[in-house]
Amino acid sequence: MRRRPPTFDGGMNASAPASARLVQSPAPRERTRLWAALAALLFVPAAVVTGILTLASEQASRCVTYGEQCTPGLPSWVFKWSAGVGTVALLVALAAPAVRMRQAALTVQVLAEGTALLVILSHA
Image 1 (tube, one colour):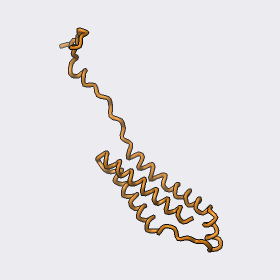
Image 2 (cartoon, helix red, strand yellow; image 1 turned 180 degrees about the horizontal axis):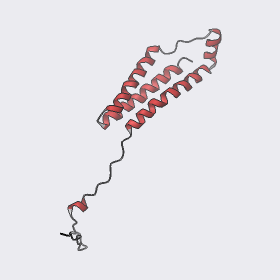
Image 3 (cartoon, helix red, strand yellow; image 1 turned 60 degrees about the vertical axis):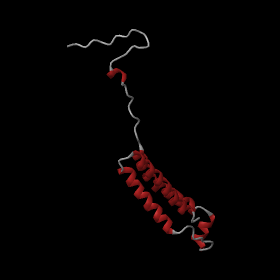
Image 4 (cartoon, one colour; image 1 turned 90 degrees about the vertical axis):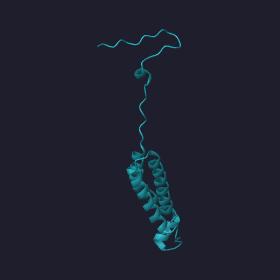
């Protein structure tokens, strides 16, 4: 049996079949996993660049060359903890089923990676 197209009388009470009224737009893509992986991949080059910038300072070069004006900077356990927290947050951001949990894990990951980079910079 062939279906007839709906007819409209042009007034305010014109109705279409339920299937025509329930047009849904596609949901936007959730890219938290992509951003988490990208942040993890970019952490290593950022750490290398931060280390080079640290060694380029006058105080660090004097410390390396002459052993003078060496400051301890932040303790190394801060770097270890922030790198560990960043790794765990990356795993949660990649594996968590809930979007809000992935977004929170991505935030924690970026903050932990930023802390690790600040520890590297503190040794200047």
